[in-house]
Amino acid sequence: MDPEEGVSAPSTPGTPSVPLFGGLKHERKNGNGKKSLLKSCKCFSVEAWASEEGTLPAVSCMLPPPPVSLARKVGAEFIGTLILIFAGTATAIVNQKTQGSETLIGLAASSGLAVMIVILSTGHISGAHLNPALTIAFAALKHFPWKHVPVYIGAQIIASFCAAFTLKVVLHPIMGGGVTVPSGSYVQAFALEFIISFNLMFVVTAVATDTRAVGELAGIAVGATVMLNILIAGETTGASMNPVRTLGPAVVAGNYKAIWIYLTAPILGALAGAGVYSAVKLPDEDSSNHVKPSLEPSFRR
Image (cartoon, rainbow, N blue to C red; front, side):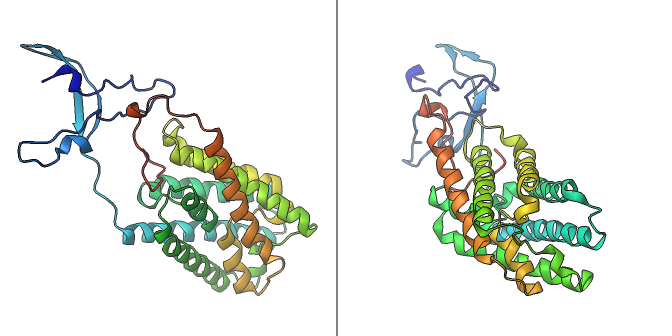
């Protein structure tokens, strides 16, 4: 084996600005002219081993996991969105029914915890977008295929309606408490929804697309961001951050007040957040030492 064509020695796991797994410098072909499976391996350091010609770079390889079918992704996206919309809307309804016993902190914790558990349980399957604004922003930055955007958004909308109609059956006639409507001016509501959606997408882009961010804590980071945003804007706008969080409950309750704000501001804010993070993200020092990012972002790396 020619040492110069060997596997690049990746940095020690845990080194700042370096991902845990590195790649192969060169693609090899076997005797039949077919590409070797080694090019699909993700390699990491183990102890070096000796040969007659000297010490060879030591690697241990594993094949990438099999691809997830679109049906599984859409199913996981539907279930995750259903859990999120049901939890956030139900808490708001109960808060109204009990005359504010949940408090703003309780409302923030409910949605934040829902986002966290969904990301931790389905993030490795569908990416856990749970939000058309995030799906569109990922696609706009080429982290998600545009051809899957309508399917994902369709699953998210259906999940929103399912959650809202279920709550209407269970908690009727106080369904109106789960609708997000502005308590101040429309300009103020639009600005707040834009800002908190920007915050959310900035964090999501970091933990889902940057190998140097702490991907293992993505669920906690995104859930905490949702909680923070609700504490900021919950009293003024309901802190939707998500068009389907507003759409389903609004249709079921028949309350469409300022719905255009909640269908536009989160999308614009998410696009801005994703774009700004991409602009400030550290450039790769050596592209050969970094894993090529997947087209579809995932919270598990």
